[in-house]
Image (cartoon, rainbow, N blue to C red; front, side, top):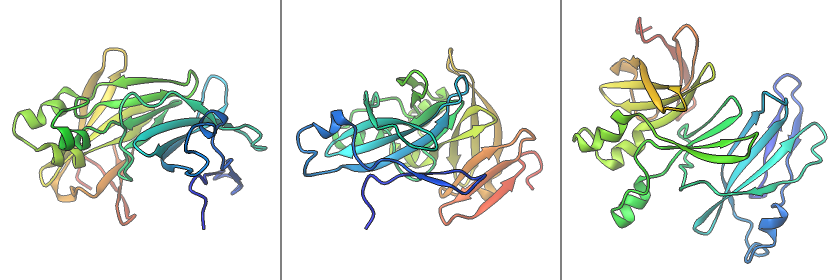
Length: 244
């Protein structure tokens, strides 16, 4: 039986895997209740800090109603230990539907808005908002999503539950992309062109014939081709300009 905190890092060039420590950080391990309950890894990410070449892993752990955050530096010997960080600014999405992506040493998570709205009819964050964790500074920030996405429910184009299923994240050559999947109409790809001002630009719309809620872009290449993955792990590429 797998330990609930097991994580491995794979080197695709050599095939070597490194098992990360199963234990919690000292700060979390000392907390009340951790002796009886390990918590569950809800999401994890791995990235390189370009300025130093250091690799770090991040994991989000569910402990009862809280999301805890831990970080570890990763090398071939794996001598480092997990360290507790400040938790995310709001609850983050932890589904398998491409709600997390690493771009240039920053981990981006789609922020959860629907569950809280469903429970107390109050939006904790704007729909489409993104939590970012800088692996170098180890600080959280919040990125507002495209304004058009914010207005999608207000304009009567979707319900909050539908919008919750329509949003995901992708990477395009070092640029963060918000994916708005609107079946059976289109899939809009919004690029964060200026992180300081929060400017998003819609560069591509994929045609309706490939659009399903279960399809998520993995990567956008420099030539404009979009690689997608379905929930049954089928991969395909699509050129928005030609439909091929």
